[in-house]
Length: 64
Image 1 (spheres, helix red, strand yellow):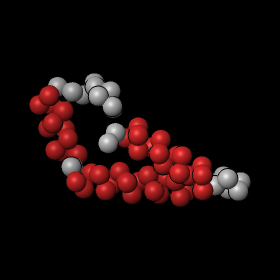
Image 2 (cartoon, rainbow, N blue to C red):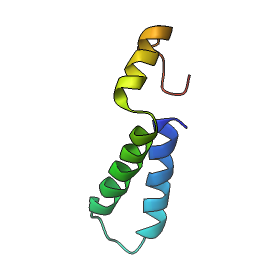
Image 3 (cartoon, one colour):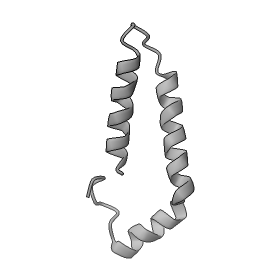
């Protein structure tokens, strides 16, 4: 799963739930933070950095 896909889907869900005019983004950012934290628990940032170094993929696009 890419973060682009994750954020796009959270935005769609947020928009669906808030058609009543509620413009607060607090819940959206809270949900986004929870999802990112959960993902980092599975594969922590140090492990990801080692992977990026190994495959020299620091400049790859998110969906690549």
